[in-house]
Image (cartoon, rainbow, N blue to C red; front, side, top):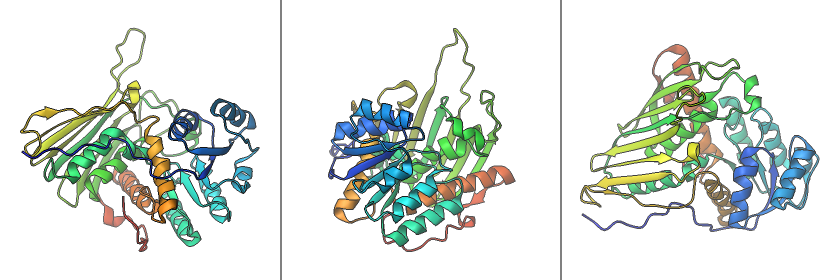
Amino acid sequence: MTAAAPFRPDQEVRARGARIGCIGAGMIMTGCHLPAYAKAGFEVVAIASRTRARAEEAAAAHHIPRVHDTPEALIDDPDVEIVDIAYPPDRQPELIRRALAAPHVKAILAQKPLALSLEEAIALRDAAAAAGKPLSVNQNMRYDQSMRVARQLIERGALGDIVFAQIDMHAIPHWQGFLEGYDRLTLSNMSVHHLDVLRFLLGEPVEVTTVLREDPRTEFAHTDGIVVSTLRFGSGALALSLEDVWSGPRAEGYADDQHIGWRIEGLEGVARGTIGWPTGAPSTLEYASQRETGGAWVRPEWETMWFPDAFTGVMEQLQHALASDTPPALSVADNVRTMALVEAAYRSAAEGRTVMLCEIDIKEQNTGGPKT
C-alpha cells in the first residue's frame, strides 16, 4: 500500500482579469455562471439577453455595470474580451461567428450542444482555428468535484487498468422551452454530459450502441426521451450511460427518489459516488484500492458543488489559456469528438446497430493542442 496523494476537487484559479461579457439571463447564467464568477473574482462587465428586461434584472442582482439591448451589441462592445454565451443552440453559431470576427474579442465560451448538427460544430471549430482565437465549450461536468477526483484516481493508478464504468441517472431535467422546436432531446442536451465525461475519464470510445424510447412525462414531440448507451473504449473498457428522465411517477404523496450515481471498476480498485445536482448537495466519491487503502473504503469530502462551483473551473481554464497562450482544456476540437459520439449514438438508435466511431467523419485537422 502506498501513501495517497492529496486530491484537488476544485480547479485552482491560476488566471483572472479578462473582461467578460455574458449573453443570456436564464437559469444557467444567473444561477451558475454569475455566482461562480463572483465567488472567484472574475470581472463581468456587460450582459445582454433576448429581452432587455431580463438582462437588467440579472445585472441588478449580480452587480453588472452595463446592459446591452441585444447580444450583437454586447459582442460589439470594445470593452468585452471574453464572450460567454448561454443561448439556444440554434442561435449560438451566428453569435460565435460574430465574436470571432470582432477584433477586440480574445476568446469565446459556448454552451453545449455547440450546434444542432455535427457539420455545424466542425465548421465552427475550423472558423475558430482560422481566426486564431480560443473557442471553448462548457462541458462543465468535467469540473464536478467527484469527476475530477475520479480522474485523479485513474491517472495515478489507484484503480489499475479500468474494466467497466457507468453513469446511472434517474432524474427529471427542466427542458427549456426552445427545445420543443428541435428534433433531438435527451442525447443532445443531457446524455452529452455523461458521454463527454466518460471520454474525459476513459479516453476515446471505438463503438457505441444506443437504444431509446419516448419519455411518458414530456408532452412535446420527441424520440430520445429515455436513453441507454453502451460504449467500448480503445483500452478495452466497457461503459454504460443511462438517462432515465422519467424516473417514476410524480404525484402527491409519492416519495421522490431522483438521483445520479456512478461507478468505475479497475483491476486494483473501485470508485463510486453520486452527482449532487438533483438534490442540490455536493457530489460524493468513495474508493477502495489495493494500492492506496489496503482494500478499505475511503471517502474524501468537500463542500463545493457541481452547480455552481464547476463553472469557476470552466471560465478559469479559458482565462488560463489566454494568459499562457495554450489551448483551453475544454477546446472546441475536443468537443467536436463529443459531438461525434452523440451523432454516432443517434445513428445507432436509428439503425438498430452498433456504430463504430470511425464511421463518423470529423475531418480532423492537426490542431497541436491536447484532447482534454
